[in-house]
Length: 409
Image 1 (cartoon, rainbow, N blue to C red):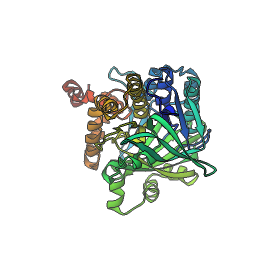
Image 2: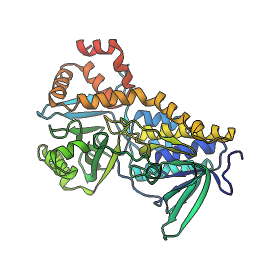
Image 3: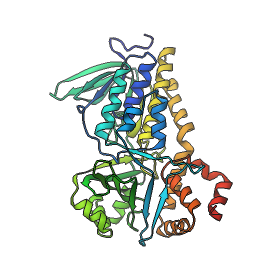
Image 4: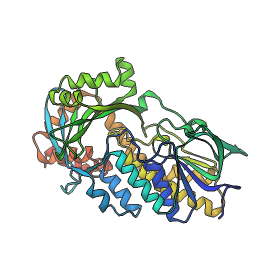
């Protein structure tokens, strides 16, 4: 087909997480030859909060997937309990602007990623497991493929007309492109484990805060199987400033909340990971290649969610790459359209997310907001809708919403 790499593939996608699978699925649906390479082997785990926001659910539906089998395996959460540093606790429902519930789906990444890669393969994408990208192939100042290593240590080159880097927060491809920027002020560090919980089937999750975690928090997220995902996410710059590690800070927060301490004491598989924030200005395209998902710093700077942005970015990348191949041009100009589409879709949302992050860095502001919410169901719905991604946060630019919050109706 037009744009096929010399003796190679049309498109090689590095990383078979949500961003990579969405890209491969979109390309395969358009008849483009595409292969996913994945350093792990399915089923494999991925450290995460395990939450599919309403936006992620919609993104999956927009990919043309039948969500009924997935939905049947998910645990639904329709509200949160927000524990302020003072001890004030307010329950916040995940409602849209009409007051309709927009629940989260909770599904462990071992299950979700396995389901999603199966959808991509069923659409026609190829999959090579146990293969790691170690470098890029550059010809005539453009990406022309990837150097890979299998889990036996053997290296080889795979030529491709276009390469999509979806290889996570520690992305080898981002490093090779000179786009691996992770300044502490734009990087979240998180730890999580799984613990047996008598509240593992509840439709509510808990947010625990202290003056030292804000704008970050600790959490207890029921997974629907008698267990819970327990963890903490905070800014790297805050950890550095306070000279404390993420696990130590989680233990400190748990000391303030006996129920969290009990869960954490029984937790297994406590591991850490990084979340590169979308508040960092970054060019994610170059001649022959794109970066998506965590590799492209696409995590929401306020809530720390990244699956929905990864899925949507993958769909955008698929359209851009497919159009470029059809035109026989995969240069920086053609693939640069991806940056423009990303900015149109998420630019304002992520700027507002960064502003909300800064707002919530102040314990006093958080306490005042929750105190107001405690006195009005409408205020609780508005804040819950914002935390729960139940409607676009751009709605907060509407003066009418601000008025409703002010009067509490």
